[in-house]
Length: 167
Image 1 (spheres, rainbow, N blue to C red):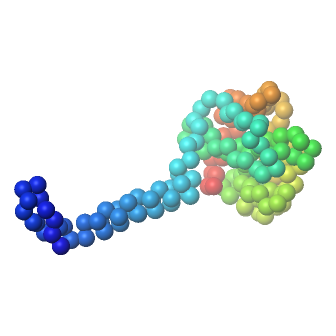
Image 2 (image 1 turned 180 degrees about the vertical axis):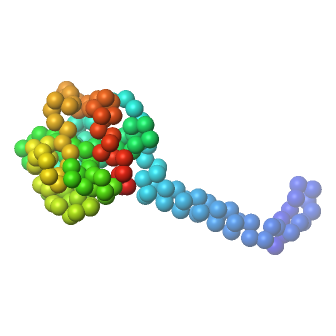
Image 3 (image 1 turned 90 degrees about the vertical axis):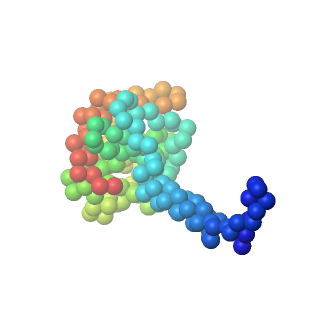
């Protein structure tokens, strides 16, 4: 294959030039997908108060990452069957120290990824003690018509729950 230069002379084209460009673009796209899927592409708010927009909360648990110093944390929020919004740390009151004591939603329950305990969504913030999500009680947050705000001081006080966390 040949190509014309600006002087009009024919010069050989670089073998596989287009193929290399396409392969490079595909590699970048694949790497981007891996990073996004792994959560590394998700920005983790550091410091400051955590604000949860009430209008985005449904009966599907929404997870809110937070960083307190070097410690990655996560708060979960869900709309219970009575219409109230329930909040908790996404770590188990019993299993937190294992690093795998966090929850994933299955239907209308949360399942501890360490011990398998199943916890009803409607019990979030109501149940204290035992193998369930650490509640964020009304006295530990403020609410207005738009937002639930959890203070930086409260989040910092509870970062010990996440020091071994491996989500």
